[in-house]
Length: 315
Image (cartoon, rainbow, N blue to C red; front, side, top):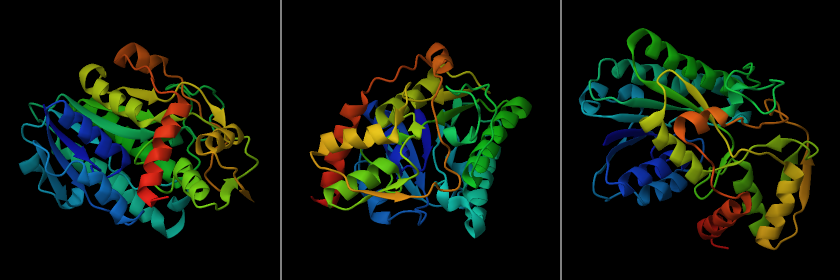
């Protein structure tokens, strides 16, 4: 299978590309290296892909790529590129979210019109689209009330995917990821920050009272869902991809302490704008259609991320 992976140097994109190569597929990876987090971390992700048979990499923005020359013969598009970050999406930076999350998605969808070999266009959406919905666990039919500009752009791109399916037959499948963690996790994400602080004997920043809950999903389960979406995802549909359970932040910090063998010092800070109090995925639909079943225990996944963090920062 010939695939295009956008955001191939990022956390999820590099894992998806690596798994496709393991299976013997041909992968064209694209990444623009936005300055949202340090380039050297993305280059480290990319290092495990570079030089592997079947891998081709392009450093460019989707808006500038000659997509009509790249897409012929592509059977699967994994659109994982995005401007990340709930808290950073306010104010003047919102224009970057519009460009990278909405406009880039529309350009890629437009370029996929009429591709005879395209089996699926898999779009990486987010639990952030739910925002303040009162449904727990969150179902694909739950109200979507994003609480951040980031969530608005992810929902807008998801809707673009649906209308390109409905009007032009592009076989889109949207996956709503719930708090992805594991080796390679972005440095702005909680577990990465917490592990880094613990390793350096620094205080952990905790926003709010610690009673907020999250549904944590290990990276290998996210990768499995992406591949299953190509084989079994129903075009035009949206699926929750979560760990299937939720944990309070306070309980997770205690687990991190146990994994690291270190006592955390907490730096209590106010709740940040855009942060939702709870996330929890109803994954029944993904189970039925995709055969999705999260397989990684939270502690085991955290142990793997801790090992990776120690190697990343050499402590």
